[in-house]
Length: 236
Ligand code: ADP
Ligand code: MG
Image (tube, rainbow, N blue to C red):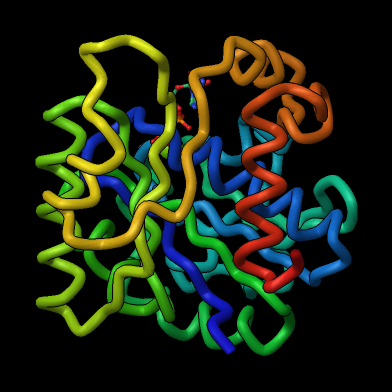
């Protein structure tokens, strides 16, 4: 069974953290034991969007060899388990991304699904999560810069022996300047798993430090997040 997914994009700001928090919450809502991990150790946001910014032990301390993973696991909505990263620069500098593989092995043994919220860019902190997951899910926006960066991540994933499951097209609108789903699929050469619309309630829900699937469950993007979670979990 495919269990560990890395949510990646190359470009920053495409919606990786939003997708991770909401897919994780939706999988937990469906009764799946789900862990989400902020492997964006430089620009850690996952804890912020879930109200865990004051967590004292985080993935930083675990990757620095100063703490055990079980002490960095916090409760999220619907029984979701969250491993945030810290926001200090010192913590980032001391975190060794090479330790991620051992952390993953431990977490995978505890859960049904593990989602890794990856960093932007192509540094070692971004590349290692592409190799250690069972499958990589690309988050793409309907614009050329996002597409080009996602293509680089796809190629890099294959170079390091990873597998790309497909792409989620996030922030889709009805603007005619948007790249089409067909075009994105053709350029990336991977299936579009689903489309999440541009939705002002996404930002609104983040001010409440609550995923949109909980704060605005009937919002169009929340419906899409639940549908994607159901697809991943094989629930129809
Ligand atoms: P990343 O983790 O890739 O850097 P984030 O998840 O932090 O991206 O999202 C970047 C910004 O885009 C945030 O302000 C978030 O609220 C917003 N956003 C993400 N997805 C959507 C969406 N479908 N509709 C509207 N805003 C969105
Ligand atoms: Mg992020």
